[in-house]
Every structure is written in C-alpha cells, then in structure tokens.
Length: 301
Image (cartoon, rainbow, N blue to C red):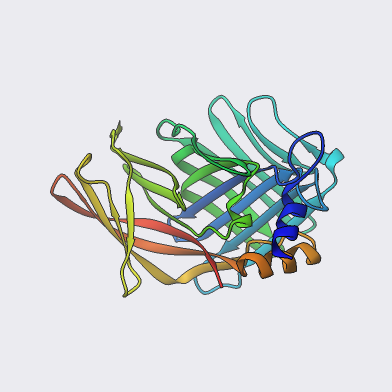
C-alpha cells in the first residue's frame, strides 16, 4: 500500500513529474526581533498542480501572530523578467539587484525590500532515484526595510533578512527529511547554514569580506542550544541560543489537499516547521561578539 501511494504521488506521463515544485523563502527579523516568514511556491505536483501558494507569518514578542495565505489558480501565476515569483497580488521581484516582497489583501498591506550585502551562494543539488532537488541562497544577508499594515496594526521594519530558493522533482517533504537552518543576521556579520539531510548551503561574511570555507557543521546539544562550526577551513564558530519567544510553528503540508496531507502523514509522519529568534555568541579568529540570529527547523512526528 505504501509503495503504491508513493508511486501515485511521484509518477506521471509526459511533461514534468507531478512532484516538481519551486519555492521562495523570505525570512527576516527586525531590530525588535519581529520574525517574518514569507513563502511563495508553485509546482506541478498533486491535485493542485500548477497553482500558486503564498504564505505569511509575522510575530512579535508579546503579540498574537499575523497569519495570511493565498491559493491561486495557475492563470494568476507568473515569473518576473529578472527572477522571483508572482501569485496574484503577492509578488517577489528583483530589480537592479534589490529584492522586493509585496503581499496585499483586505486589511493587509506588506511591502518590504531586501538589499543584498554580499554575493549569493552557488546552487547545491542532491540527486535521488526520483529526481533532483536544489537549493540556493540568492541573499545570504541583506538590509531589510519596509512596513506591514494589518487592520489597526502598523509596523515599520528595519532589520536584516535572507532569501532562499528551492526547486526540483524530489522535495524533502515527500521523503520525511528533517531540516535545520541557522542564520546569524547583523550589520557587519552574516553566518548561515541551511541543511536538509545531506544537502546544504553555507556562507560567512565578516565586514565586507566573504570568507571561503568547506561548509559548516550544525550540532545540537541536549540542552537545546546549537553549535555552528566552520573549522578548520575558517576560524569561525558560534553557539546559538533559541529564545522561547518570539517563535512560529506551522504545518509543512498546509498547501496540499486534505487527502494528500493524510497520505503523507501516514508515509513519513506529521511535519512541523519551527522558527525561533535566537542569540548567537560568535568567535571569529579569537574575537568574541554577540549577534541576533534565527533558527528554522522542520521536524517529523
């Protein structure tokens, strides 16, 4: 039964595999540690093939999270000239090197810009028997500015963010592959590792220098803090201490139909995506400093 279900979800006739999908992930945190998690995706998979999906979560310590979602018909999905994705009135675009995110609905107006402070990563690709899956960070750290208006709530955003791009025909969610991502976001310091199983991208920026390295290793302690270690190729190590608040918790399969969600739950478990604001204690070439950070984890229950 399980083998037949996998076959039904990953097989197709002519054209791209029905599991083929693309996702953009816009993550940010302002100086008051408001967390911003925006995702735009489109794919050929499942019963909703060709349709676009936009999801937004915003949370500030001590406040009720703002949640927004849009499912769009395929006719309302397009790709801008340079890069990004458009899903109805929700847009992620790039112009002259600057990225812009806009999300609009009744009672919601979000407009953010992300100016990259360093170069993008190279794409990393993993190939399995069902196809390829790739990830890249077009923005490893950038100045985040803009505003969010939701009902009577108005908030100016001034902080830092990252942008991740994922695509392929073998998404980790169909394999039950857990993910851990750590981003240290400061004005003159950016560290990052996005790790899903054996697939990872990583970066180090100190001041205006991007340091070459052989990848970063994430370790999780029994007490719940993380260690981000780039040694020996780069003399950089950090301990990351997640905060209880602000934090976000969302299901991974919320863009699928109910039958598809229950099928995947029986195959690989129930996937939950956690995001926490954190504090990083970083040592660069023997020099100690602290910086704000963000932890993203996808776990299966």
